[in-house]
Length: 526
Image (cartoon, rainbow, N blue to C red; front, side):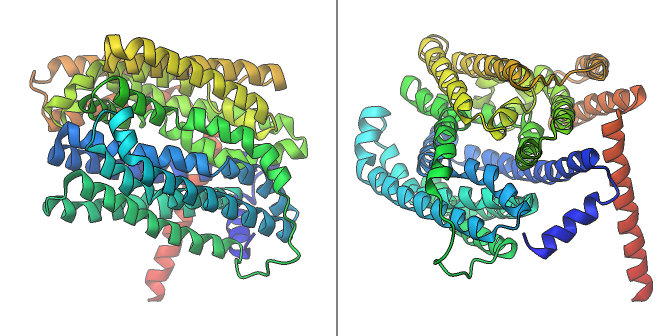
C-alpha cells in the first residue's frame, strides 16, 4: 500500500480502539461511496430525464437494453476475479507481500481482458440474430454492436475498482466511476442528442466514457501500487484466485446482474416501451439500497481482514452497526415512494407514471432487503463462496420463475413483484445463514427507535400530502419530501443515538473543526 494511503488511514483511526477503528474505517469508506453514489445517482437521474424526454420510452428501452447487455457480458468476462481481489488483497497488503499483489493483478487483468475481447467479438457478430430472434426488435441490432465495444473496458474497470477497494481507498472509485463517468457521459450525450443521434448517440457516449474511466483507474491504481514492475519473479497463483472467484463469478452473474437479466426478460416477454418505463422505476428504486451498497463496498475488505485475524466480536459489532445504518436510510425512502410514487415518476414524462404501482412494490422488497443488512457480504468474505453460489442459484431460479409466471399476466407490476419477492426472500435466507454459520444477529432494542421515527414521519408525510394541491408540482413535491425526511431525522435524534452512531458523529465534528481551523490558519498566513 502506498505511504500516502497508509498515512491517511492512520490519521483517520489513530485515537480509536481496534473495534471502533474498524467501524470508523467502514463509516469513512461507506460515507465516501455513499456520497459518490448519491452524486452519481443525481447525474443518472438528470441523464434519464434528458434522454427519456428526448427519445421517448421506446428509444430509452433500446438504449437500456444495449447497456444492460454490455454489463451482463462484462460480468461474465471478469470470472468473479474482483471478488477474489477484495478477499485476498487486504491480507497481502497487511503482510506487505508486493509479489503476491502484483501476481494477482497480472492474472486478473490478463484473464478478464482476454474474455472481454472474445465476448465483444461474439456480441458484435451475433447482434443481428439476437435482435431478430430473442427480442423481436431489429432496431436493437446496431445498439448491441455499439455496446459490444464497452465489454472489455467494463471488465477492466471492474478489476481496477476491486483493486482500489482491496486497498480500502474508496475515494478513487468515487472519482472515476461516480464522478468522471457520470459527468462525462452526460456532457458527451447532450451534443449528440442535439445533433439528432438519438439512442445511438447516447450509447456512443457511454462507450467513449468507459474508455476514459478505464484510463483514469489505471492512473489511480498506479498511485496505490506502482505498475512499473518486472513480470518475472512474481507470485502468480491463478488456481487460488479462481477457486474463490469462480463460485463468486456465478453468484455475480445471478445476483448482481439479476436486475439486468430481468430487464432482458422484460424485453423478451413484454414490450420495448415497458422496458423503458420499468428501467425508470428501477433507477428510482436504487436510491433505497444506495447506503446498503455503499457500506457493503467499504465493509468487504474489513470483514475479510477481521475474519482472518479471528476477531469475531468486532465482526459481529460491525455487522450490527452497518445493518442498522442501511435500514435507517431505507425507511424514509420507502415512505417517500409510498406517498409520492406518481409525481416522482412524472418527472421522466407522463407516460412513465404507468410504473407507479411497480415502483411501490419494488420499494417493499427493497425495505425488507435493507433490513437484513450486509448478510451476503459476511457470508462471502468469511470464505463461504460456495454457499454464496447456492444462494445465487436459488435467487436466479426464483426470479426467473416468477418473471415467466408474472410478467405475461401482470406486465410491469408482475416484474416488480418478481423483483421484490426475490430480494426480500433471499435477504431473509442470508440473514438466517449468518446466524447459523457464526451466531451473529444484527438486531437489538435500538432498531425500535427506527420504527418509532418511521411512524412519526409517516404521519407528517400523510398530512402534508393531504394538504398539498391535487396537482402536485415539483416545488410542493420537494417541500413535502423534505418535511418527511426532516421529521424522521428529528425523531431519531430526539430518541438518542447509539454508541456507534455517536462515535461517528463525534469523529465528523472533529474532522470538520480541524478543517475549519486549517482554513483559518491558511487565510491568516496568506
